[in-house]
Image 1 (cartoon, rainbow, N blue to C red):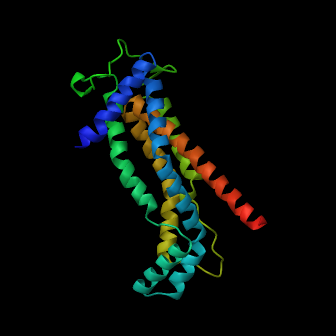
Image 2: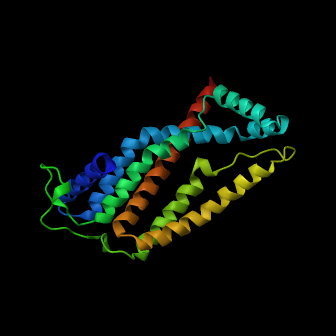
Image 3: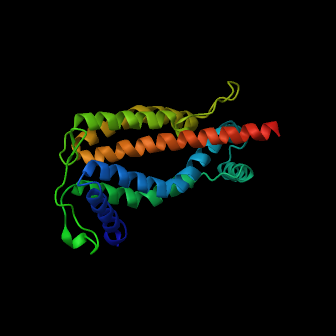
Length: 242
């Protein structure tokens, strides 16, 4: 089912785009990544918006944890807070669950590179006569591109550094955080630096097409997150003026 619903359509889209771009695998990877990200953008937009709202609620959440030590009562108050501010704490998980099959399928598609399996092609999709693996002098099929790996790591770092989900709202000094909150903050800070390093290592181990996908995906997310942040600030300003 996964092969039929996710892999085959994306594989055919990549081959069709490669043919449309004169056999350029690099341009096809960029185009396919953008198409998928644009299709999923309404979901990611909603998730980013929810993340920003949750970060703004951090001081109130800390106050609830302090005033209601009982876990059951604490959870009830948290849900009331989310309901009052119309935010969903599980929106990020939902987006990840919906995107995961697509990400896995894209990964498999890009790993296939220039290898064409006629049995997986739709009757109206034809493979290009010649594949051009080179894109900006970089090989999209071969593994071990240090340039693509480093750029993938840098864009991952920038995406996480500017991501609303990775930022913490300031809590007054008089309201010290509990141990769990401190651990969560520490893990968030750690991820900003460990994740990019992991991406560099993985980007070097996989074909260039996969690393290029990470780069384009990260850049798209950076732009989308900044648009959502600015839009929410603008809406807030208008509400204050009114």
